[in-house]
Length: 447
Image (cartoon, rainbow, N blue to C red):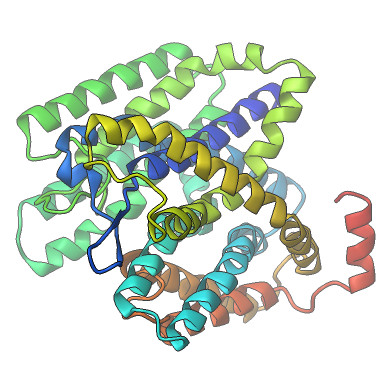
C-alpha cells in the first residue's frame, strides 16, 4: 500500500506530539533547590509526592514514537528494496540519522563538562549535570538497535502479519514473568531483553498499520485501547507493578527498567488510541497548510529530544544559584502555581537555543549528504564494519543512559572512544564520502 500524504502527516504529528509531551513532562517534574551550602540539588518529585506518578500515564508517550517510527521505517525499507538497495546500506542510513545529531549534541556537552572539571568544579555537581544531560539517552540505543533489526522484523511481519505483533508480545510477557519469578542474576540479565521486545511491539504495530489495509481498522484500535487499559489497571491493582511508567527511586519493581507487563499493556492502549483516531486525523490534516506545519515539527524531533534539558541547566544557574527563583515547598500549592511560569521560561530559553542551533542543523545536512546515507554497502568486510560500528555506539549510548556523561565528575574516556570509533565505522562503511562540491550543490537544491 502506497503511503498517502494525509497519513504521513498524521505520523509526523504523532512523532512531534510524542516528543513535545516528553519535553513538557521532563520540565514539569524537574525540581531544583539550593542547599544551605550554596550547591544545587534536584529532589525527585515523584518519590516525594507519590500522586504525581499518575501523570506518567499522559507523559510516558514513547510508545507512540515507536509506533510512528515503525510506520515510517516500513515505507522507507520497502522503497529501498524496490529500488534494489541492500539491508546494510539502509541500516547505515538510519544509523547516521541518529548518530550525527547525537554527536553534535555530545561535543559541546562533553566539552563543557571537561572544561568545568579542569576548572575545579564540584565533581558531585558535574555528576548531576552529566546525568541531566543524558537522562533521555535510554531511548537512543534501543531505537538504534530496533532500527538495525528492521529488515528482519519486517520480514517477520510479511510472513506472519499481525501475528508477528502477538509473537513479540508473547516473548516479552515470557521474559518478564521469568525475570519476576527468579532472583538469580541470569534472570535479571534475561529481563533486559524487554528493552527490545516490548518497544518492538509498538514498532511492529507500525508495520501492521502501514501495510494492514483493512486489517487494521478503527475497531482494532478500539479493542487494543480497551484491552490495554484494562490490562494495565489489573496489573497495577492486583499485581506487583507500580503506577509510574518511569523509574522512581525506591521501587522494587519498575515498569521501565526494563519495560514490564504493565508497560506493555499501556503501550497497547496508547497505540490503540492512535489507530482509532487515524481516520479522523487524516481528514483534519488534509489541508496543505496543516501538512506544512506538522512536517517540520516531526523532522526536528531529534533536536528537540536531545537538547531539551539544556534550558533547565541554564535556568538553574541563572535563577536558583542567584536566589532569584522562589523556592516554595516541593509539591505545595505555591510550587504548582509557579510551574507554568517555569515552563514558559524554559520554552523561551529553548526557542533561543533552537535559533542558535540552525547553523549546526545546516552543517549536519551537509555531513549527512557527504556521508551518502543511501549508498549501498558491497563486499564481505564492509557489513562487518557496519555491525562493529553500530555495536560500539549502542554500547556507549547505553552506558551514558545508565551512568550519565560524567559519572565521577568527568567524562569516561572509554565510552567517548567507543562512541567516536563506532560512529566513524558506521560513517565509512560505504567507502569514501561524496565530494564537497556535489554536497554543496545538493544543499543548494534543497536535497
